[in-house]
Length: 445
Length: 112
Image 1 (cartoon, chains in turn green, red):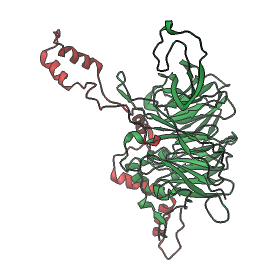
Image 2: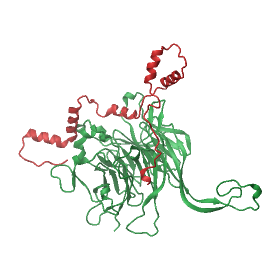
Image 3: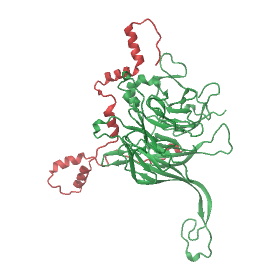
Image 4: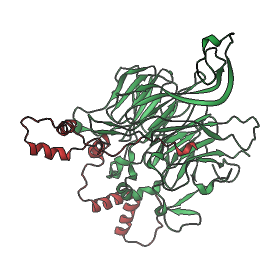
């Protein structure tokens, strides 16, 4: 974390996106995800587009400056639709992107909007054939009578072309809005979750999906909670978790029964009933759940905090980190401007020692679990000189505001960082503001 | 929660201050109830969830739409009185009336 005495410091590396303040709705970034090696970084936006960046492998190995991420491929993943039967507008916004582990030369990712999941193949073409017998170079057919000799076509190098093609479309399995997709460690199946149901798919089969969780009540009047996120365990292919709007997480084992309505474990922190208020349930709603890389812990994000749970202990989290506790005394206005419903995501670093999540005013927070330190950093164009070290930010909660501090009332609630991602092996992070993608790296001394 | 410095205060004032300190949430709740007295007794609850499940709902009746299409083609409509159909016809939203959902043919600004 930033601080004296050789602590980790973060530097600006790159920023992608337009500078102008007038943000088109389509440009709002809705998801960010590194692939399993960290070489590729994908973003999805409200306009249904996916942009993939690739880290150039730099042989010159300048130690204090890691290779940059440059555009590798971009394509339109989803388009807006209108369901005339249900009178439902289906947004093209990409809710989630999840990479498949690489099996061959091509890269595969799953991208989803509210209703449909698509498997995209991203492949490189750097050779083309030349010297056909029956065709000229421009494609015109040769008159067979003019051919006097045979030749063997050869593959010659060409400028790299990256092509994205939809290989599978998984449609019509969700009545409600898909909030999560998660690829299983078996590399054959994946799950998709909407507000009330979780479905299991085989990556090869698009016309069939198994429903494994269904929390829809027989009478919709009795609806008290919805599913907010779901994820497969990183190593145990039979285990997955799903979180709810009531602040609970259920761990399910697919070996127990075909329909996992009965959980194997229920993670819930007991609440003091005297502290309960109108806002309690809303702010306890879990917006994201992520397993640690080692599979022993999971992290949940609710409106004001990040909690780390030991999978062996259901009674309460082992660690709780306050993201922006000063907002507790602003809940009334946050309810009125709908910010209280903002869904922040969270992520682990490669060795599970640090967790990160976003906040308002383009601030994002990091919590170093081992050293019990936390930092507040800002993604802004003002701190965007190459390798500029990010200064830690502080929010003043009352009383005298020190120089460089910002008061709670001056925070810009329209500048929210909902999506962040951490390189799986290196200290490189991707932070999405409304329409810009920032890439930061730690300072190598 | 910040700790307030102790000073010479009455017991009531101290209790009130403690309440606010212990539960800024409750203070915020009181503010909300003051602004919106009709806000439901059940906290959070079904209203939010149902609104969430219904996100994106527009209204389009394919039956009415087809009736209007038929009327435009001047087909005689049995039994239905002309005025009724006409009134319905005027108010029927057509796919053209729905907010235009153009695909983003423009490339993403991140891919520059």
